[in-house]
Image 1: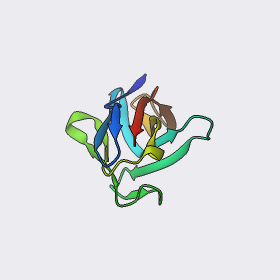
Image 2 (image 1 turned 90 degrees about the vertical axis):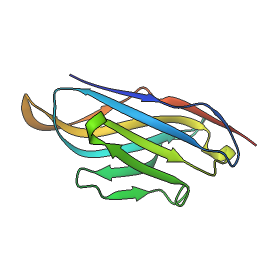
Image 3 (image 1 turned 135 degrees about the vertical axis):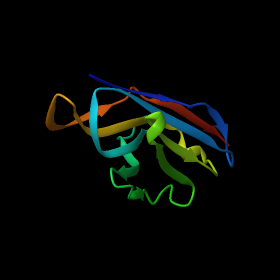
Length: 121
């Protein structure tokens, strides 16, 4: 099976930076898409950033120019660099992968358990 483990969440300050990581493990054959979502208290989960298997990125308007998504294939890890933090960036951040396993061609979606980011003003 596959495991996604997020880390890097912390208490940050407005204007500061944090870097989130999502480490993957398991019998992964191919990655098709990788995404970061966040969920603030009382709000629906929203897509923050996405990265295709071919390296194309997309960033939500609310964080464009401040957040960057990237990955390190050698480390099986995806990152979210968060700069110029704002209090409204507070929430639980989840990574999400669309991938196939070595055991078969089906494309499956996996979620991590999330990491908490709290930004104070």
